[in-house]
Amino acid sequence: MANLDKTNLNVSNDLEDEISLIELFQALKEGKRILFFITSLFAVCSIIYSLTLTNLYRSQSLLIAEDSKDLGSLSQYSGMASLVGLNIGGAGTDGSIEVMEIIKSREFVKHLITFDDVLPSIMAAKSFDIASKELSFDFEIYNPETKTWAKKPSYLEVYKVYLDGIMSISQDEFSGLISINVEHMSPIFAKDFLDLIIKEANNLKRDKDISTSTNALNYLKLELSNTKLVEIKDSINQLIQSQLETQMMAKVKEDYSLAIIEPPFIPEARSWPSRSLISILGTIIGGLLSISFVLLRYFFFSKEIINKEINT
Picture (cartoon, helix red, strand yellow):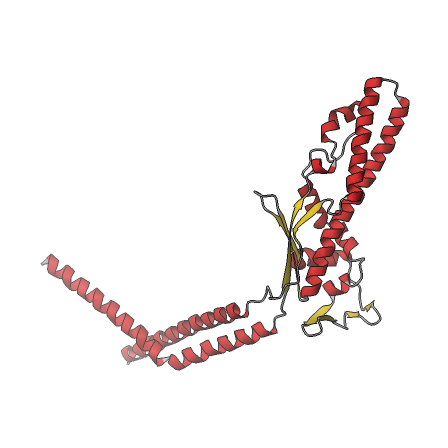
């Protein structure tokens, strides 16, 4: 008898599930016009929205930071330097970290915007003409003819755009290779700006090392003239030779801090937006929302009708 009750209960549950599925399909069938309308509306809106988005192009470059020992670092002479009271700055430090922090620094951005057309291209660019390969600017912000600003942005405003929207830099933890990307509506500016970043990062690091080396040489020459101990003089002479090697490498080597493996290029295809993906996602969202609306509407009105019949 108990087994019979369980069998009847299972049959009843199966019938309820079957009825529920039938109701679902019935609801969707009755609301097919609403399904089509809402889904189509979202599809059209997502296509229109994707077409209003500005094309962005990404130029990339792959680099490797020159090892400090290859540039005549003084790490091997740090013991000798301590004998004469000289603190060798940067000895044993990772050159890649230093140059990456230079590129991401506010002072570096402040230096970059001193170059012609960099600031307007970052802060006032409106559109890019593929045919003429020229940028057009928002005249309410910047007038390219008179080169005047309605309100010139500060370097801190440029820094935020630079770091959050234009430039990205990363280093592979295994190979140590550095990847720098620049994304902009103009593929030409993206390439040129990336070239400028690499060039000026090398120049600033070179100038910094030459300045440090010059100060060290002046100090060492002064110490050499003041000491009479032969051992100290030999150590100082070796330090002087190392500093001269550093200056030679800085003045001779073009890719002083960052050696280019893959140079920047002018991209042909846009990196963003993916209009097909936006359209597909918009259509899917519209379809899901329309299904939810139709089912809620169907079961809400069905329940309302049942309640009215019970009350009457």
